[in-house]
Length: 350
Image 1: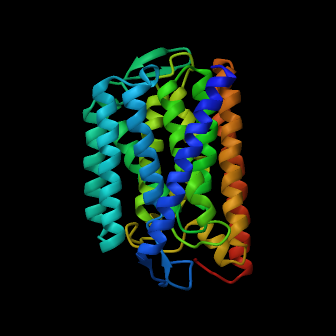
Image 2: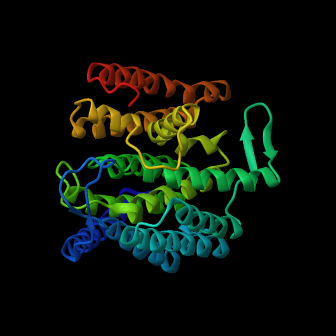
């Protein structure tokens, strides 16, 4: 890709970021309020639904991509499936922001959207593994894709509890994913990541360091869904063995926090679907760590994952098995730090 082409893409994304910012400002005036309660970090009613700006910018961009950028299109069936599923998850999540539906209804809606994406044909058919080559996954590929989309969609939703944390993490992930995808000629993943980043750039100044508006479920679930789908698309980078690990590396901090918290609560006999403030990032903030620094730590996790992705692409097969595991080290260190902070703050069992 030439520098001139990249600058054109950047200018287009800058325009979309402005669209996102205007929609976010409009949502602030709409005053759909998120009111404080025992499980939330904010103490005063704050507008929510800012994620509508992210959705509008992305959907506008992806529609133009579908119509005019032939070289970056997926097959029509895949493309329509992604657009319709992403739009559906955004609509349902926005309605949830308005009505605060129970988790069961949200999960059903997410499952239907995931099925729409998979039903269009966008699922993992093979796993490109070291020494074994391309392994046909059969029906396991469909099941794994569904589980992946649902987990990431909810993980981004769960992690959206402090100013800028989810949006900033998604932005960093999009930047690195676009860079890696461009190097592999994965132009759909490249453009889609840039479009999502544009929406996030328009939103983030309204949410960090001081939140004038939250992105709400419409933003967090939408970002999680799109990143999960891009992870499936990236799994088809034929020149990169184990390319299905690229997006998990970028979201390592998010995925670890959610997996650790769900496991800890399940072992403690707690209902994992019940709202709580027991995520590692929440415990760190409750223990006295500045929320801005907690968010920055997660941005750093995503950036570290991005550097691992860059190294991963050109690494020999044997190293590809080890590199993603290295991302567990900062997560384990973070866990130790949070536990120590919680003990010092007297939080007990959190």
